[in-house]
Length: 267
Image: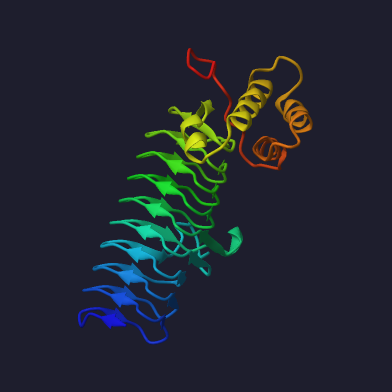
C-alpha cells in the first residue's frame, strides 16, 4: 500500500494489496478498497462502500455519499465493480432503506467527468457515461449502455442492454435493448446498428432484429405488448429479439419510449 501523508484513512477501513491513496484523499471507516484500487488525489470514498479491484478514482470524485433523499433514509450501501474508471467530479450515492438499500455498479465502467449515479440504481458491466450524464434514483442501466453527454435518466427508468442515448437527452421513458434514442423527451430512432456491428453480431441476426423492431413499433395490428409477444414467437432462436420482447413484456413503472418514424436509413 502507498498512502500519501496528507491522506486520511479512518480506522476500520479495509484496504487490499497494492492500494494507492493519493494526496488529500479521504477513505471512510466503512469502506473496502479491493486489490490495486487507486485514488489519485482529492477523492472521497465514504459510507458503506465497496470498490472492486483495479478501479481508479480521479480527483474531486465523491463515492458513497448519502443518497439525495428527503428525510432520514440513508442506511444503505454502494458496491462498485472491478476495473472501473471514475473520472473527475463523479458522484455515486449509497442506497436508501426504502429503495432496497443498495446501489450497484458493474465491472469495466467508464464514468466521465461530473456524471452521477443516484441512490438505489443498478448499473451493469461495460457502460460508458459521457460527461455530465446523470441517473435519478432507482434507474436500471443494462450492459454496454452508452449515455451521451448531459443526458439525464429519470427515476425508475430502464435503459436496456446495448442501447445508446444521445447527448442532451431526457430519458423519461424506458428504452429497449440495442436501441438508438434521443430527444428532449426520449424517442427511439431505430436500432443501434453501429454498436451491433462493433459487437460482432452477424448480418442475419441484425436483419432479424430490424424486422422484429418494425413489427413491434411500426406494426398496425394490436398493441405493443401483443406485437412483442408475436416477435418472440417468430424469432425464438434470436436471443436479442427475445431480450427486446422480454424487456417490453416485463413489469415496469415508467412508460415505454416509442418510435417516431423519420426519413432515415432505418426506415
